[in-house]
Length: 476
Ligand SMILES: Nc1ncnc2c1ncn2[C@@H]1O[C@H](COP(=O)(O)OP(=O)(O)OP(=O)(O)O)[C@@H](O)[C@H]1O
Image 1 (cartoon, helix red, strand yellow):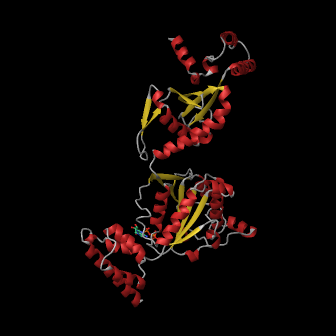
Image 2 (spheres, rainbow, N blue to C red; image 1 turned 45 degrees about the vertical axis):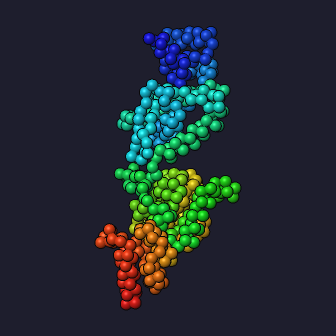
Image 3 (cartoon, rainbow, N blue to C red; image 1 turned 135 degrees about the vertical axis):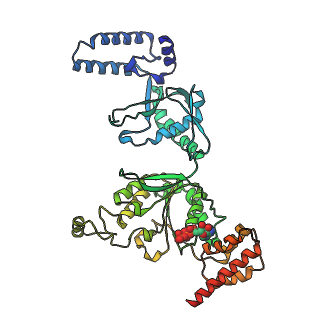
């Protein structure tokens, strides 16, 4: 039985753990294998009768000798690294293996999360599979262990993949294969994962983090009622952003873009964000500034966002008092430290300040993963500090205004399925006289009593809404 196990292990070097069980690599010549076995035998005899120092020396020597003659190189990819931080490469490798070679395993695990589109099969622990890449054979072995950095209190284990290959392929693996896994894994995950809406919540004293649900907002640019020229500009800007990887690299700028959406309540700012995310097929990070304690937390949470995402701060003028001075003098700083309740907007350890926000954004721009859009929305653009919305930070300022007749035609097409109607001329005239938000128009066209009503009734109701707004305006 022992021989059978050894034969199997020799076929697949990914299982070798030399010092634990003296599984001498299969690729060695029989003479060398014999010598190593003798060395190990001597060691086994001596280990109980020699001092600790000698024992350590001999262990190191034995390890080095075996390593020197071992024709294989090993890379381990742990699920979590030190400090229990998730290792992204582990999940990417998992996705890659599930797609590429998990069928070669005798035992598989079927997994599906609330965000998966389809179930996917991963290799079970203690299973091994073989992959080939540019002529190189690579062995993958799944297992778990308890590394030294896991404290006694926390008795969990860390799963890992052991990748084994001939030493001559080391450069190929390090420079190309791992990158190949990274890209393929990302593609596979993106294909099998619904897009996500992240929000920041307080994670029970251990700092702030993101929590996510599936992002299923149905808004698109087709359903967005907006002035056609503005809509075209936004779509063109998004398209050139999406295809701009090389361009951004060439001009030495991070591949990021900032949008400021401003306009009255109900003008469609949130709807526009959903349309942008759906158009680009990006995840959305809805950042609630008021839930963040200080600038440090803010920076951390920004850095935790992934690429291909839209980061949103809605109603930025209400989130914090961001109009205060951005630079605080040293004297003021000392006073601020002495008195915890300091005016918001000033640099202070207990508040998110304008300078903290600017630093986080600029840090985001330059430091972390690419392909991100950050969007601020506000009902009061005039209240914002110019530094916050200057070009370069907020590259495109988009006005989401009151409903125009052109925007109304989008509602008419989507809600009622019509391109024209006798009442259109009356409605067009009224739009020139009153300011109503797109949300009011949408409400007018689909009020509860009109759900099953015909087109005439819906339009008549809208005319009534517009006339009421007109009356109110003239009263004011
Ligand atoms: N431009 C628009 N196109 C299509 N629907 C719209 C538009 N504007 C508003 N709506 C409708 O009105 C509702 C409210 O709009 P939305 O929340 O996007 O406005 P907002 O500008 O973000 O408002 P607020 O400033 O109050 O947050 C949406 O759910 C949508 O049905």
